[in-house]
Length: 454
Image (cartoon, rainbow, N blue to C red; front, side):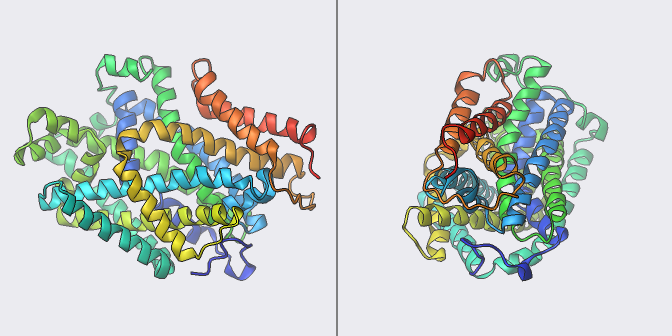
């Protein structure tokens, strides 16, 4: 598994935008992103959710392109890049920990949703034995494919992505036809959650709903920007990773939001009936249909056995990419801490951490940790960009700042994240905006005054 984890990617290993895009789009076409789309549209209504999705697409594409550009120039992955730009060798451990927790968290979430899909399809009970068998088999598959079949997965990701989109389109058509709903009605509904629930989310007004969606989407967009860097180190040009970042964000915040909203809105009544047919009480069935588990069930109800198979294929592609990026961040984390480990052990470790997260009921913490980690990843990426474009003068300053810890980057990340999520969130509810502005401004000030480069 030689993939230049801790070194620059050579020119002969560089790829064009099309091959890069299969990975940037493939890692976001997942069950959890469909759930985020359904949640956003149920809270804000279809129109406001889509406006928020387009907004985050623009922001995420720009952030992803800039991170990918620096990775293209340096040939380094996002967390190794942090050693040179913004954090120092030891300081990059902070970024590695943030990114590893987030990307491995997505690995855990998708495993949990796949598990629920298996239970629904085979009508199995949720027992310890089934958990051991299914989670064990899924984790073993991701480890094996990452270690021995990553190039194969990359080659067939185009096929699995196309098939996944085909089944999504078929599901959308099927649910509209079987429920006698028009496409116009399924793309024009307003908020459907109770007023007291919306008030608790701070989404009582149109602006509140828009802000809720932006904060929900930005976490995934921040993670994707760092994935863009991991993939951008293989780019032949800055334009190639720019196109790949744009396509990834379009799928993340427009395609997945729209399809997730339409399918779950139009198909919720049929999903409830399917749960009740299994002997589940009506009130429990309703809550299950409007949960992340309901997305996995939708593939089976509306796609049948083909939907179930394609769900596994598409998730497998994304899970291998999650395992890959997660192990990359762990590589830098352990190496920077002088605990050099074989790459295969880090691939295994990523999956073991994901299993540990599942035992912590990660699904119940989705919104809370996505919000704060979106703020953290935004600050992390922004500081690297500020160092490269402002302090290093667009990369023209070739001096290597051989620092163990760049305290300007560490302090700026922590201060910006705390201010954005805990202090100024009521005044400036779009948290990533505070994180971005404060981290860049504070970093440049500290780097040019208190913590000057050696």
